[in-house]
Image (cartoon, rainbow, N blue to C red; front, side):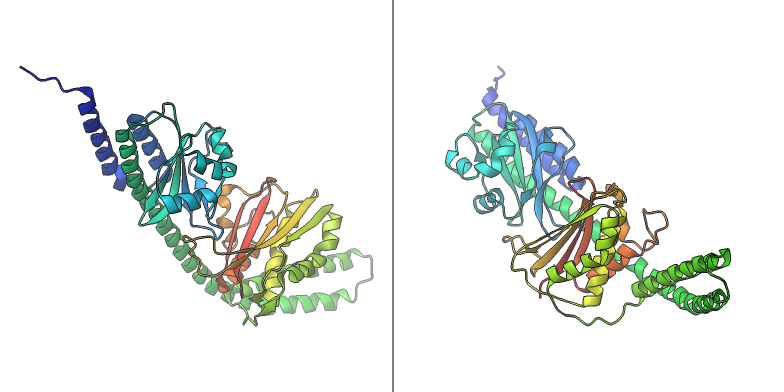
Length: 414
C-alpha cells in the first residue's frame, strides 16, 4: 500500500530545493540587474510577490546612497534614491529583520515620510540585504496575499541572506572592474603625458618665432587693410596653438603647487566675476547657493582658479542661447557606519541647462583629447581631473535635473 504524503509536508521540500537552486547560481551571476531578475523569480515561487524593488549601496561616488537597481519600468521610475543615513537605512542597519508595513504600525509610522513613494506603489514588506555584517541593500516587495506563514517567513529570511552575499559579490566584481579601468587609464595618461610634453617643447620655440615674425611684418601694414586683418587672424591662431601647448605641458608636467587656506565661496565669486560679461552677452543667469559656515580648503589658488574657470567656461559654452548656470557648495560629512572616505569633503556642483552629455560618455570626458565640442581640444576637463586627483579629490559628471550637465567636484576639507 502506497502512502500519500500530505501537501504541507511536500511544500518545504520544494522550497528547500528552490533555495538550494538559487544558492547554486549565486557565484555564476555578477550583474546586479540579472541578480534582481533571478531574485524576483525565486520570490514569486516562494511567496505571492507582485512587484520587487531592489536597492543597492552605491560606493562609486563620495555622496554615497542606496539606488534602485532597475528603473526601466514605469513604476520603478517613481522610486527615490535613499541617503546612506536615511531613517529607513538606519532602521534596517540596527534591526536587520523583515518589516511588515501592516503589522509593524509603530515602525511604519516612524518611517512614514520616507516610505510614502513605496506605499504609493502598494509595497507592503521590506527586508535588508546583509553581507559581512554590513547593510548593502534593501528589498521592497508588494505581496498580493498576506500574512505569510512561519515557513514562508523563514524561507524569506534565508533568501535574504543568500541574496545579500550574491549582491555583495556583484558589487565587489563591479568595483574591481572599475579599479582595473582606472589603473589602465592612469597608465594611458602617463604615457600620453610623456609624449605630449615632448611634442609641446618642440612646438613652443617655433611658435614663438612665428609670432614675433608676424608682429614685425604686421607693423608695416596699414590699418583696415586685408594684410593687417590677415596678420591679426594669424596671430590669433598662433595664440590658440600656444594655449594648447601650455595645456599639454600643464597636463604632462604640472607646476609645483603652493597650497594655502582658501575660502571657497570667495574664490567662486571671484571666478564668476571673470565670466560675468560673457554670461550677460549669452543671456545666461549666474546663480550661487553656498552652505553656511563652510570649512576652508587647503589648495593652490591658481590651480583652483584654473579648475573652476575650466568647468564654468564649459557650462557657458553649453548654453549659447541662454539659460541658468548654478554653482552650489555644501559639506559632505560622515553619514553613518558605512561611510568609508576617511575624511570630510566639500562638494562643489556646477550645473548648466545645455543639451547635456550622453550617459555613456560621462567617464570619457576626462580623457585627454576627447571632446564633444566642435573645435575643442579635449584638454580642459583632463586638466581639471589631474588637478583634483593631486589633492585626493574626485570629479564626475552626471545628467542634471534640467536635462543639462552637472559637474561635481569633491575636495578634502583642511
